[in-house]
Structure formats: C-alpha cells, structure tokens
Image (cartoon, rainbow over all chains, first blue to last red; front, side, top):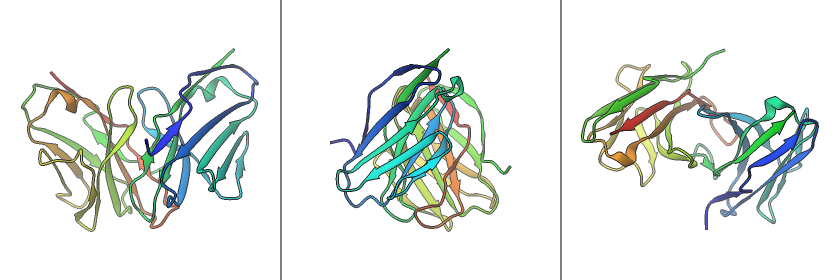
Length: 110
Length: 115
C-alpha cells in the first residue's frame, strides 16, 4: 500500500468553481500534514499545513480526519492561477522526511 | 526573501560520469535535504543532513550517492557513476525549524539528464 495516495486527476474546472481533493495516508503514527503546490517543472511550495481542527486560508480549506487517515483540500472560487499540481504531504515525527503523494493536477479553465 | 539556490539548473551527462549538484541553503537553517522527482512521478526523499552528518537516508541513496557540506554554506550531492535511471529533477531543501511545524523550503531544482 502506498504511503500517501491521492485522487488521480486531472481535474478540469471552470473559473469560479469549487473543487475538492482527497488524500489518504497509511501510517497511523503520522503527526503532521501539509498541502504543497507544484507548478509544472518547478519546486514544491507549501500551500498550507493541516491541523486537526481543520483550517482555512482565504479560499483554501484543509481538513484532517485522523480516524480515517484522510486529508482534504477544498478550493473555492477557483482562479486560473490555481492551475497546478497539489501534493498531499505527510511527516511522521520531528524532522523525519516529508512523504509526498503523487499529486493531483488541477486545470482551471476560463 | 531568503531562498535556497541550486546549481546547475540543468546538467546533461553521459552514463558512468560523476555529477555534483550544488545547493546553498538558507543561511540560518540547520537541516538540509535532497529529494528527487523522476518525470511524472512523485517527489522522493533521498537524504537528510544535520550537524555535519547524515541523519537519515532512503533506500534510493545507495553507495553511488554522497553528500557533503564542504564550507559551511554549500551542500552538495554527488553521484559517482550515473545511470540512465538517475535522470530526474533533484531538489535541495532546508529548514531551520525543529519539530513538526518547521516549513521546508525547496530550491528550484537541478534537472539531470543521463544519456
């Protein structure tokens, strides 16, 4: 079983749409969770951390369900500039390495 | 804004040649990492480095790979004898934070093409 699994994508949505990405992780001992964004042939950049109580940053909302080992990202009012690959990332403890999912590609269309 | 810088941005080499990829982490950071991403695949951990020694490495990081921090600013990844399957984007990353919330900052990557 893969450590971090994501929706396969790609997601093609019109501007203004709401889109949700899902992710599951296999290690129940995982302690921290993130969504990174990666533009084509660029480096991953932190979009937001995911907290147990859920958290929001502008149009982006992240949720964590530890019991189901499930993480989600909701993007409201999609912009053309949101087009990218969204990476679900997990860390088990301390400064142990980040474990990346393969990513879900989003294309926002005018 | 401080950033992680990597050189070269792209290197083409022949199979069997040695390659050195260079990184300058953010100056006050303490933890350094190399990741790689084969085209179309996920980002994979190679090695982490702290206090001038390797703290963790993956099964990918075999004897052909080595890392070094030669002068307190540069952080290098050496591949001794490149194989075709080493073709990938190599990302250096650093963090100054300890613990679960320390954000990892990635460089723009070095694309390695092995012919």
